[in-house]
Image (cartoon, rainbow, N blue to C red):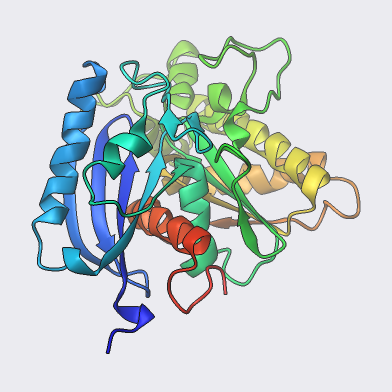
Length: 321
């Protein structure tokens, strides 16, 4: 006899550099994986072709008959109400009907779309650092800065699937123009490329290997380079201001920070916690805790599956408990 624990969700994690897919079970295990580079500078049909190739690998496995739904976590903005995506870093997709395209490939199974930050949040609340917390902000700090919210013990996606997108809170009203059209966004200050850009502009230079990335800046900061430390301190200040604003607005208990930039460890987290004390000053916001994410690079896939499972009532284990 079939039980809910036999059901799988096909998950897609779509970003500017890679399109990943997996079949995920009710314990959050990834049974099958597939991956393609994102042809981000190509036209929309070519990008969709890469998505179809990833899905095709999953479809051809013996496990596919157990798949009950598809969950998609995509770089944004997304619009879950229309099933469309317009990722800033994939210019060929503007109001692209991703849900309809995927639904046409998966035999009528329901398809659930959320932003990639919301997917990461679903994963961390289900099995990671925010597990058991009723109110949380989870953030991805990487090439961009995304996020999502858990409120009242449940994933809060908002009508379009973008709720909690902390990367585009403005924390510097007269700051640099952001690709989103605003100025001084958290992402424009705290993302990996902007940490590296700021360090280079201030005189930091890569080592003998020529690596100009944020990871290299982090290594220099850990070694005591003052310019590298200053660039991370500025990123931490922007993140702290965004977290404090969120805590003040919706009374979160914890902010979970993941993504490649979070790999810098205490180079980021120490000044972040310090500056958070400067911004989260009201009694109900001052106790917010900052934790590193636990699920790493699989969070997008696990979370896309978790978001679909919660919305569709799959699996006996409720997401976040």
